[in-house]
Image 1 (cartoon, rainbow, N blue to C red):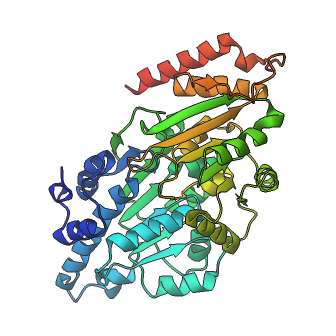
Image 2 (image 1 turned 90 degrees about the horizontal axis):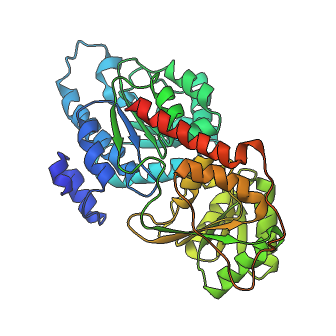
Length: 422
């Protein structure tokens, strides 16, 4: 299948060819025609599958077609209704600054050579500069919820003529506590609009939340629910908690890793791991929300260029990172939220490339592993690394939630939830 077969305009197909795009990915094949038809969409798509193009390309096309029709509007119509360019017609809401930057860059690439104007809006930078850019005219605004509401409350902009509303990585927005902000944004947009909701995971929470956002949506899932990309090889190393950092630095040096994204649950943990890796001779840096935007951008640039080999990040900070050919993702500890495991390892194995997702598992992590495997509905392969064998005299803590009987109950509840959806 080609991009031209998806009813995209020739100028967009030519631009994709210039960018090196050869064939549409499964999510693009399924979503682009549906979005072009004007329907609402609820899509489950893992990171690295081309989902950004799946919603930005058809939206750019519809905006171009609206602009082409604008001169035909009757001059007697109120100027505010006739001058489409004076109003933002598309809002793309994202959970983090890094994802906002990524989506905005894609919009600019796809819309290159057209008169579509896009503005990026997020916190941590000058609000006045953003206000000036918005007031100069923006067809598309890519924004994080908090800073967007700042502009709306300051009456810098209006969403009264909005035609397309996109929620990208909606599950992460809920995880980060943006529910109230989303509800406030909904009060400021027209009821008659097209709404697209993209999420790496489609669970009961997302389905429930989508009911207040979407109108008879087309549900699109390109992978089995709660699955990981086939191009990712998962490895779990059993190791004592005190030796995790030694094992990690050993892997980085022995296997000559050029880039490794390492996940920590906390900002303090990220700082500690980065410092310990530096002491072990690994060029590492922390990446989390307590760092200024300038520092984060500098660290990310150094990581992408290879000056930094190990980036130690929290889940919130790493969401939306777009790093080409990232071969290694490491869980220094399992996340508290099972969905975050999929998000984490989805940073590698992108766009058809292969990648390795490595988890360092100590005895204290085993209760969380039981819950994760129930969520994934499969076992993760475990192994020992010679020289770093775990102390078998240690015993995993047993709680009511992590007993085998509880694990079976979780599996039954999961199966029941799936049958109800069908």
